[in-house]
Each structure stands twice: as structure tokens, then as C-alpha cells.
Image (cartoon, rainbow, N blue to C red):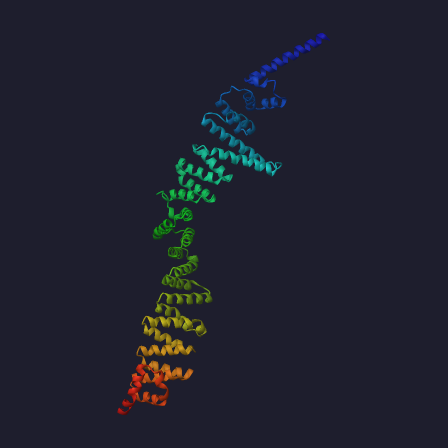
Length: 486
């Protein structure tokens, strides 16, 4: 029994020696594997992955140079061993060399991202734990903000991470930094930086980034939505006058893109410049023929608000010509008449009126407008136009004051016979009074119809003197003598 036992022990020693030699050949850093503190699971993992074996060796040694610790941590991060990598990086977190600390903090970010993304794919992870993992990423991104210098690849990643994790002020700064590093895509990164700044409510930053794009001579700024984005930011930072100047400049050469034009028009109205919006809508009407009627109507609306009545009326005439619905055509035509009146162009107003005057069914709708046009024609001494309108208006009006106005206007323009006829119509329609009698006497006098004047004066002699004008009293005084001479 003793011999057999000794043999067995001898065999065990030989086997152990051979196995140890094999480990030595496979893993030269054998002291880590044979460390008494290693558990069975640790040894199993180490045998399966040489990188883990190296981690186990470095973990228990204090004399490993920082560069080697950092290199191993980077390898572990690349293989998604984020726990092991983070454990090693803890040694270097307070290293005197800032470059090393920057690399450490970068790898810690990658590890925390790895940890967070693993929670998003594991349904067993609770929402609070997932949020906690997300917060560690955000915290690490804030830590990295203290390092200003990064290569373009890392800057791009940092900017995107900040955007993805809703650290928008940082994202804006990172994209702006990237624009200075990656000059081939400078405009793209500045626009993205501005977008992040806008979302964060950092309008001065957004305006500054977009201004750089605007000032880049290689950019066709007015033809891009970036122009509108810059103007939005400039408006919010109180730079209204600069926006007005810019819009006034590009009016001379507007883009041909309807969407961009709509944005520009909207901004013009936003800063209280309807005149600029009018020119933009006019451009839209000329290029977007499918929606031309809509754009002409917008021209009319905003031109009217700016006091540009002629432009407004012209636009409505264009819109009316494009309208298909009869009711819509009538509405647009009547609006254009009002605008031509405001533009003090009675001839244009009458041109718009004439088609309607020929339709009896429009009598009530256009009578008031016709009267206004007639008054305007009077004011501008366009007597022929006024006469033609009054000839149409009076038979359709039952307003005595309007009839008397026309009769007096005719008399004032020495249209004595017409005036007398109007007064006689007034007398038939509404009855007589002293004013009518006196005006008829005066008109007979002007027409040298002295007998008719005298007859009227004798028939109403008791009532005339009190209300007669000075001129009419003179006529009444002269009538008896002239009647005797006749």
C-alpha cells in the first residue's frame, strides 16, 4: 500500500510539473495565473481569453507603467470588457500628466456608453437602473468638456454623444470646434452647431455660427434655408435692422425656390416689413403658377396693410382673372374696386365696375361703391367719368340728399340744363320745398329763361326771401325789371 501511495504522489507531482510547464509556454506572465488569490472562475476565464489573463496579471501588480495600463485598458474597452477596463483606469484618474488623464476620461466614457447600451438591450434591467446608467454617461461627457483639444474623429463622436444625450450646449460647442478642425465640412458643422444652439435656446451662439456661414463667400446663402435660420436667430438677439438690410439686399436677386421664398416672406412679416413680403410674394406668383392666385391674394393683403393700394388692386385683378368660382370672382372684383378708390384712381375703379354695372342682379351690391367712385371722380375733376356714373346711379337711388348733391354738382360745373332736369326729378320723386324752387329759379336765370324764373318767383313770393342766398336775392330783385323789358 505504501509503495502504491508513493507512486501515486510521484505521478501527481509529475503531472503538476508538466501542466505548469504548459501554462508557462502559453502564458509567459505565469505569476498571475499561479497567484494564490485567484479563484477557480478567474482562472477559467483567464485560460479562455489571453486579454483577461493579462488583466489579471496587471490588476495585482503595482509596478506596471501607466502607458501599459492605459494600453491594456484600451484593449479591454475595445473588447467590451468595460468593467475590467474601468477598474484599471481608476489607477490613473489622478495622474499628473493631463494627456493621460484625457485618455483615461475618454476610455471611461466609452465604458459607460457600453454599460448604458447593454441596459437598453436587456429587458430585465429596470427603468431606474437604465436611467442611472444614462446619467453616468452624461456626467462623463460633462467631465470631458474641460479638455479643449481633440482630433476630428473624437470631436465628431463627442458632439454626437452630447446631442444624443441631450447636452445641447456642449453639442453646439463641439460641432463648432469640429468646424475649425474638419474644414472641408466647415459649413455643415457650423449649421449643425447652430441647430443645437437653437434647441438649447442659445440664440446668440446660433446667430454667431450662422453668421460665419453667411460670411463664407463660397456659400450661396440666400438660396438656402440657412439664411432663414440666421435671420430667426438674429431677430431673437435683437438684430432687426441687420435682418432688414439683408432682406432689402436679396430682394434684388431672390431665389427661385418656392419653399425658401415662403420662409423669407414669413420672416419679413415677422419683423414688420410687409413691403418686402409683397415683393417676395410677387416673385412667388411669377414662378409658382399652380398657386399663383393664392400668392396674388397675399400680395394684395400685405400691400394694402403697407398702404400700397395700387399694387394691392393690381394683385386682386390678377387673382380675379385666375379665379374659377363666380362668387369668388365677384368678391375679388369688388375688393379691387375698393382698393382702386383708396389708390385714388377712379378710372381704374370704373373699369372694374363696368362689368358689374351691366348686371341688374348686382345693383344693390355695387351701388354704394359706384357712389364712392363718382365722388372720387368729382374730387379729381374727372367730370365725364362722374357724369356717366351719376347717370347710372340716380335712377337706382331713393336717397333725396344724393339727388340734391348731384344737382348742385351739375350746377357748380355750369351744367345748368342737366341740373334743372335733376331738380325737376327731385320734385317729382320727393315733393317740392323752398330750396328746390329757389334752385329752379336760379337755373332758369342762368339759362336766360327769365319768364319761367319770374313765374316761379310770383307763385312762391311769400316764402322765398327768408331762405334765399345772397345771389338768389339778387336774382329775385332783378326779375321784375327784366320781365317788363321782355
